[in-house]
Length: 205
Image (cartoon, rainbow, N blue to C red; front, top):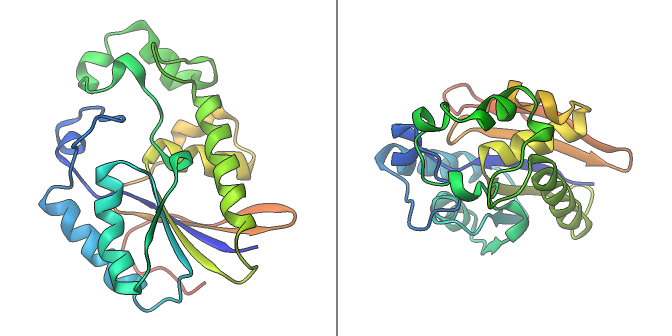
């Protein structure tokens, strides 16, 4: 099975301001995010990548565009890579959300959390695990693939494959513009690297 590079989209103003973007439309990369995307494109231009997949949101597509251009590939949009559906929480500041009773559940027992008008973390985890499985089935064992998604979605995927319960997935950290990598084989996925920054070069895989 292939190696998948899991990239979190670059920085945007919602990240910078501490606001939960969720699936809010028209959230674009800021200057720092654009620079991160360009750095990723330069890095991956030296790696033989078979496909670039992206969440359908603007900030992920804008992160994918320079990468795909450098590799002469077409971005393939996958709904399964989309952000968690935060429902009524979408667009709110983290400061205001911390005052809600659900916040403590989200942080300490996320397996029990369901966002009002949205989905649960368990549903989001199942969605991305199924999506990655479908993507892997389309590729050969030695293929290298890029999937551009969101912080919680990457953490939920990694947690599933390393056997970390959903209640502890918040202990993982995924920075904007970072790269995590997983190797997928018949026995499941194995974590190769987590939250790597291009300021600290990744070992060859």
